[in-house]
Length: 531
Ligand code: G4P
Image (cartoon, rainbow, N blue to C red; front, side, top):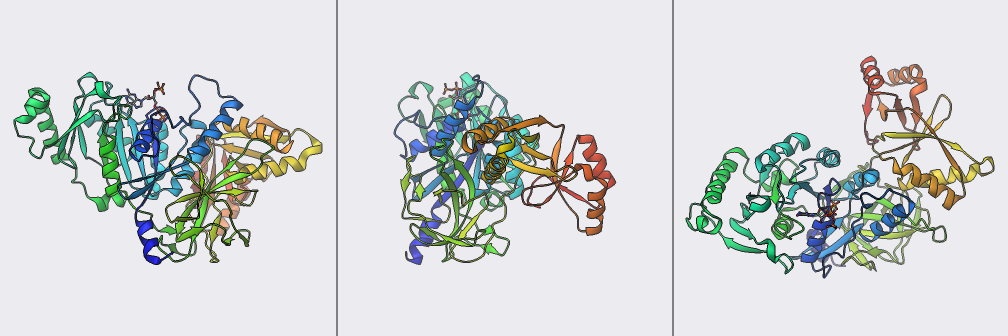
């Protein structure tokens, strides 16, 4: 591998995630993007990774979901000289923590919002993480073929609820039944929508249009709509900042596009702009130093682990984001935490929505590594350097159960099962100091069923749950060691340790949390484990 080839390969990578509330159109948009990239040939090829609404979630659903999500975890395709890697961010509420973690492995994000529903809860939570990490965000307002909120109101909502500064790069002409298309402010052209043609490729007509005062506009969209568009575009120029790529890359400005994914409308405009402005692989912070993508030596971290729920096939796939250099098959790499060398004979890539063995992959890519239990989330592989990548935090869980061993003969199995499931990042385990109670915390309630089922089927252990009334678990630190000790003593019954032995405060209610914070101003409370 020559240095020049490596540089070129890395520079053309665009690794991103699509974030949305379930049903906003993430799967549909992903599919249209793959169609443009030639990665799939027909619509319907990407299975929705969510558990179908209406159906009660049972184990079959969980298993099916897991099967699908291995296939759709990473979808790569070539487009316009770029290699685009889409990292799937599972949309179901109960898989939120996995989604959060995937955001640590992307360089940018596209947020999909349903024009009728506006900004929804899960989008808010996920974008909060993007903001914290300064991830560049593009917004796609979907379902313009349906009646929905007024565009300006929606932009206000995005600014307020998501805390993003926005700048429209396309603007809708009407919506719902009256939706006629969009004016691309980025490319100064009119893209007209003709819904009837949706089955035959791109349902649109593209007309270069640099001067909106040109009377031809009235002929094309009608006088009223033309006048409205002129006024609105004037308003945009007055109210919103000009688009500045540097600001977007710094996470300080979010371009907004409008379209309809199902009609494949506005998707190409989004993709064309995306490959032009979205960041190539970015440098990542390790505890030791900043690691740049184009370094000679390979490094990467595991951000997701997929276990096979079939007890006969216990192997797991660890998803590794390459941070620097070139990863090569059958080459010895250092597993930093275990201080041992590992090599991989069949690392997998996910080109063209198919899994295939790769000989090499570059910074920005994700490879799947078959694993018999060596990895846990956050593990680093390098060519020998001791690196620990930052930014793979656990998130403060909101649902809790106390776990008790249901079979005294199987306590070892239970301990092992719990420990492995926690390594996979299925949930978090806290040990309360006062009574050694083991408390599982998750972001969504379905995980409890998954854990119980997997403990039984994969480890032969019986976990019994007891309800426990907890509001939140927060990591605590203080610069004042004495104060922290005193806090630990005074709040003994609320203190626990996580699996990394970090100090955690268990709050029974929002009120306890607030009053504890008030009483201990010298202690800091954190909602993620990355302190
Ligand atoms: P998700 O992955 O974000 O959960 O959403 P998904 O793409 O599955 O889309 C959710 C629903 O919204 C789907 O309908 C999909 O067809 C529809 N949809 C997506 N984009 C548009 C759009 O631009 N306009 C309109 N009108 N609908 C759109 P469904 O009935 O739930 O599923 P299906 O039976 O169509 O698969």
